[in-house]
Length: 340
Ligand SMILES: [Cu+2]
Image (cartoon, rainbow, N blue to C red):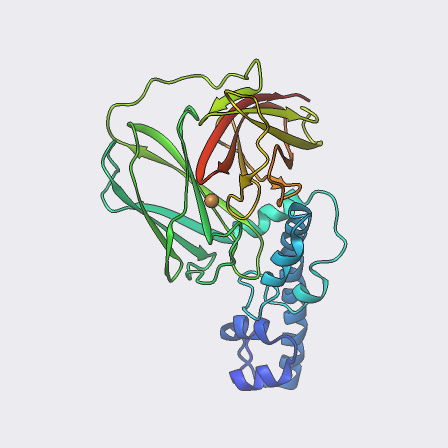
């Protein structure tokens, strides 16, 4: 394109494509009507491409939050511009009737967001407090500064060690300008994987991860082995997990039945934890895959807390169920085998 024209002009001539125009103005240079027409069609193509990229994100969100979608959607329908979806189509068609899996497309949208994990020292040292900074930016490197709260937080950080024996779920503070910080202490040396789970305003949930090396003596390396029985005792509670299916590619309901460990009395007054009956995180045994899980009835208080998820492929997975009772949060881990 070798055309020249002013920003004002382009905005005036492109009602309804304002955001696209703003985004692409630097590339638009031209004077002739012919040129403007060319640009218009280019913008249409670009807008369509952006819409295609944006739609599946909206869809994956739609399918993911089946029981509490309304609040999330109204949050995403604010007037804040979508970072990767500069098109009005997002609001008109984005939240329609989309079922099924959109994994491939969602991945594309996620690719447009970058996260970097840095520490105040060159490498964190085991048993020494270190400050972690997570910086979120778009593909162009420009920080993303608006986020939508998801499960009561702007960003959820999950830290696991290589053997998935260590699990930490914390919430870094937002400093503005795409930057989140938190002080944390790694319990031993070795490799850890960090997962940042967040939702850019107007976009869908994104999970970004990275391995970090912590210096110091490593803890003993244990194998991630499937549990023989899915009944665990934690913080005075006996928590039994049931899976409606252990097959890959199927929607699975995970039900956690919570009783008092000593009396076996059912717990029926769980506290809300992160705005729901509980929070569940699932990782594949190599920590390569982070699986989103959603409460089926987020307002439940026990004795059963149910969640929906889908394991994309066979293999061994570790599941952490997090609940809160009488002010005390507790985490219950399980290892399961998912078959073909
Ligand atoms: Cu969290």
